[in-house]
Length: 92
Image (cartoon, rainbow, N blue to C red; front, side, top):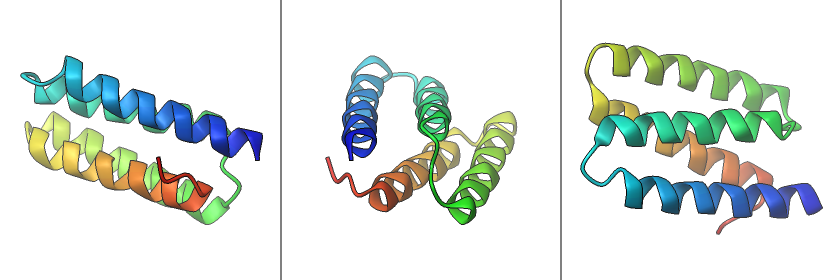
């Protein structure tokens, strides 16, 4: 329970900080979202299925970023963050 609350607070803080600091720099938002996902993965997600989906999403987002498709990278990472929050039970 404590982990999911802490994860929710961290994800919320990361998302708020990333949007305010990266308002003019979408690539930075993509990087910030990737970092948020990596931090959430370090919080030991319970579901192996979720871990696989998150890893696939991170690889896809990194490939999109490398191709210069920053908007798609941001969309992919935000969707993954929402899925992590939904699965962990934090809706903040």
